[in-house]
Amino acid sequence: MNQIRNKIYTQKFSLVVFFLLITFPLVSQSFIKPAKIDSTFIIDYGHKLTARLYLLRESISFSINPQQFAPEIRYRPNTHTRVGIAGFYKWFGVGLSVEAPLFTRKRDEQRGKSYMLDFRINAYGESMVGEINYQKYKSFYISNPSSVMDSWKSGMNFPVRSDMTIHSFSSIIYYILNHKRHSLKAAYLQNMRQKKSSGSLVFGPAYSYLKISADSGLVPSNYMIKKNLNDELNIKRGRFSTVGIYAGYSYTLIFLKYFYINASLLPGFYYMHENYHSPDEHYRNSKWSLLWIGRSAIGYNSDKWYCGIGGVTGFQSEPLPVGNANFNMDLFQIRLWFGTRFNIFAKNKKDE
Image 1 (tube, helix red, strand yellow):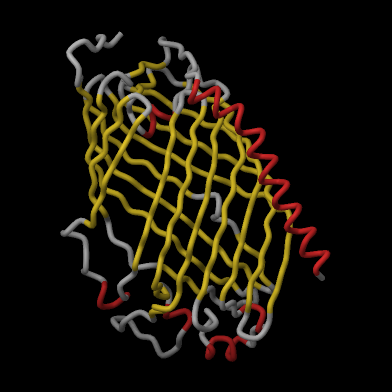
Image 2 (cartoon, rainbow, N blue to C red; image 1 turned 180 degrees about the horizontal axis):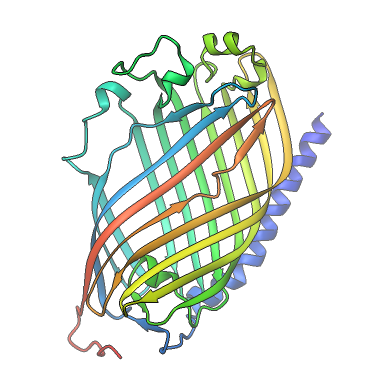
């Protein structure tokens, strides 16, 4: 057993090291030595301060699908919309958001109060985009109690698991092959502007680590008995890691000169390892799987003003097969923004 365990850990470590090695030269070319762009397709506003106001909604959801003609159990944190400000100048950017007073505390009584910690590092080069994310969520509620509990009626408080905690860490690098004519910065940061429609092959490595824990099994005991479910399904705590490489396509459509739509679909091949506990047993499993990443945005981006809405689904939004069930994780972020650009130094060059 120890030999098998050591073999699994060696494989995981080797894969992570391999993707770090192939990533380093790409990162150095993109961030240390910026790539040239085709000015007929892209305008660079990096010499200006790009400022914005935004509304942000992000969350993580967790569902258990028994695959035995039994309804799934969906857990969600009671998160709130946040309002924030952000600014970008050349390669540097910073932002701050707080809960919006008009949108907070309205559902806490029915859905409980969740704790959320979100830490992100993003680096946007012309040919490379890198993201590192860490989230911690504590306290979840069952969002579909009518399908899980016969005693629950509309208007009642939702069942809350205040003991349930999820830690999520993920990192991903996007290498944009056609970076001279296609810009993700133009679609999501607006310190560039895409002048003509363009697309690009996008590829790179990705890694995620998920830790979930609770004081007892996450499936209600009455539900387990009624549906005659296997004990392996009733996870109490577990760690799930995924490492792999993806390749897909990103395209930005420009219309009416300043309006755009960007969409990216990035499927990949990943190695997944599971290490989890039910109330009475300990399980391990490893497998290869095909997963995907998605992101999209639509907006208006002129020489001075811009606005838009965009969303990202994390590559952890895959089914995790555990025993006779699928445990599905879904991380999402949706952002609505409005902003402008202006010179902060008198000697800045004029726009082309």
